[in-house]
Amino acid sequence: MKRVTGIGGIFFKARDAAALRAWYARHLGIDVQEWGGAAFRWSDADGKPVGGTTAWSIGDGGYFAPSQSPFMVNYRVEDLTALLQALREEGCEVLDKTDESEYGKFGWVMDPEGNKVELWQPPPGG
Image (cartoon, rainbow, N blue to C red):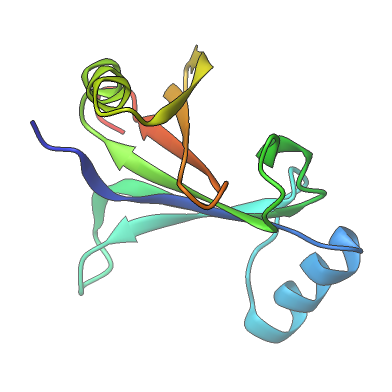
C-alpha cells in the first residue's frame, strides 16, 4: 500500500495572523484569500495544470489541537481508511475523528513528539 504521496498543505499559527498574512502577501506575493490562506495549483514547466493543489494557511492554531505545535503538515494519501487502520495496527496514536466533504477525506495521527499530522485523501480528480 502506498502511504504518503505528497504534501497537501502547510498550516501554521501566528500571534497576529492578519498581520503575518499581510506580510506574506506584500513581500512574497502570496495571494492570501479571505479564508486565511492560498491554494497553489500544481503545473508543469510550461504552466499547464497537472491536477493537484497545495494549501498554505496562517491562523490561530486552534485546529491543531491536541498538538501544541505552531504548525501542522497535511499529507496527501491514496487510501485514508486503509492507512489509518495500518497506523492503528502499528500502535500509532490515531485520532478517532475523521471528516469527509467535497474537499475529500481527512484523518489525523499524532507523531511521537506530539505533532498532529493531517492525512488527506483528495476527491477523485483532485
